[in-house]
Image (cartoon, rainbow, N blue to C red; front, side, top):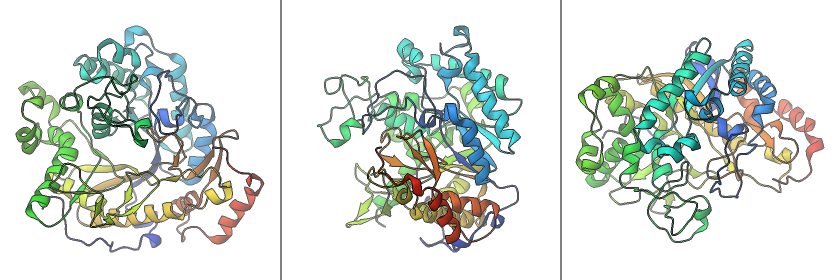
Length: 480
């Protein structure tokens, strides 16, 4: 079975006892954010978000980046992964529309400060935010014109920042951008074509049609995702049962969710099962494109949050015989399945020539309880457990020969989420959205500090009490 490897669902290592010294000296520990989710954006479009919010201020990182870098320094991270805003750098989408020098200065100041504090900047060039002017002009990634415009934008980024930035990620989560951006319409740019009955999820974004939702862009959900698809990855699936059909479904799911973006840059073409199932809707590479695409990577960046069962049925379930695949987190899509990351990494090693891999996102959320005091909200022991358990399986994967080089938890700060808005929190630092965006360290931040810096068991009770006593003045109810 392509997605099954030797090893149980319980790790051989005790994650609570691991420290950074259990990993190679050159292993990178960082954390990750994206521009739109933490910074003041340059967008004016209406968003379909669960709580009706938008990212107009997010967590005000644009004005508070110096404070945030100081907090990253305090955590002790080796690297900080952040994304650039295409529209902030090129407001017209292209170089002939002019460069926004103020936007470039912001990123220069951020990069210089990170380096001064001994933190390596890891830059994602594209994180879902196509300039609206290019969407309006030719449909963004639905048009081949985007290839040249994206290349031009990337060249500007390399020219402006490449003398100091050595770690570049081309795109973030192409499976999310294609599936959620062009099938169900819940992520930018909000395309979709199939009508849906009204439900609580409609505010987030259903498979939309203009006759249902006037803010939805029309489109063909059967072909657009294949036109839009690019490279990188996200997910993993286990068989629903040991029935041959379900085992084949699990392998097929990996090819459609992982191989879709990895196979072309490794082999020069899409997985055979995709060619067979998708047919003419799946674009073909020309011989010249094969030469350009094959081998066009230095490493794979994998974002891992959860695992679903894969079954021979239209909708892969997260629950089998009434039992969920893992503990559910704050978001309805996120189940805690730590062993899945080992299985995915070993699958990538075995099927795709053992590439160098960085785990560029890994995290868990909780509901944003607006009635909770800050002191209560800081007690995120579930997040500590999540990271400890995933690190244990990462260590196991490395023992099995996976060339894993780094780990980037999502996220150092609570932030604006693409569909959930401010209704969930992923951060190690609590952000008070009502009272000046003040940052407070959660227990997970204290754990990460100790894991990275002090080589002692996480979360000494005395240290927790000192932090929470410092925040005692903030016991008023949260309004957001």
